[in-house]
Length: 414
Ligand SMILES: Cc1ncc(COP(=O)(O)O)c(C=O)c1O
Image 1: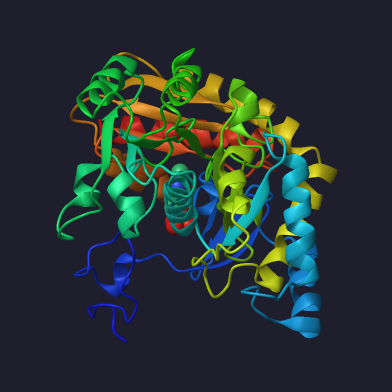
Image 2: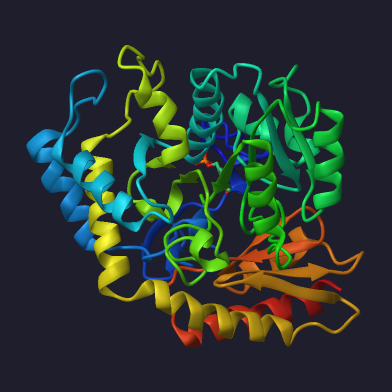
């Protein structure tokens, strides 16, 4: 294939017309560093796509996947089947969960996890005698994935355009605006049709926005008041990113459903899922004849679950949840030092997820490109945000290098 041709892969979130030469081919990784096919090294300041918390090249996880694959590479968990890694990882997750008495539904991605949470919320209400409760409120901006349910909940209008009709009864309100939420619920029959409110504790791919103090508790109160479920989408925040296992613990709010993916395996295998709390479980378990007609072929895939177990052991054994706090402090302070009120307007974030907010005329993609030339991979969001979410094993020197390169890149393009 010549460089002037389009590549065989139709790349996600990319221009279909892009040429093969536009892509950077990553061939290996170790710790916080990845290497391309020309031998250039980059600090991975976004943990790939917000997921590689334990860093690249962890032989323990590769070995666990290989050992499981030799024993039982795959067998489904529909109907009457189970397997030991799936059982074990669900047990581990129940023990870690930010609510008492959870069970776990496994998927292969974050979008499927979100889809599952939306469906379970509606089903649980229907089983409890309230089939009218179908309204799901999420926020803008937010990112919940790409399947029809998940994109219907995603508060990024460009992501929602061009796909035809989205899922009915899924609406967005501005993040941090409890008044707009109350007005919407008033409009929608006083909250009597509300099934669930869904929120990322820290908005991630929608721009990196931590919640204002008291906001998540405000969502919990609305759910309690209206008899609805609180869904926290912890696909990015879970597994230590904010310095606690879950953002729910970090912010002290009790969810009914928690979606997770990404760092549950640090990306060594595709895995996601939903922690299902008692308020959702009970109506589903109350009818002994109910069959849950939902699941993915790879729900509970044994090799993916083996990867999760090895990954969780590393997070715990190496104290990476605590480490997130010092990574975040250093990164946050460093980025704050770049704020000059001219090219860089703000540094925002929490734990080990941060972003630079750029002034008009300083293009985030141009900053990203200038950072790439200097050996650091960050992620532009829209035109004015550059996001950082490094592996939690990143060294202090590497954090400092990311900040230095970000500063150089901003100066180079502004
Ligand atoms: C908060 C959140 N939810 C859901 C998703 C969708 O996950 P996936 O891309 O694995 O489908 C993402 C992906 O970035 C995410 O950040």
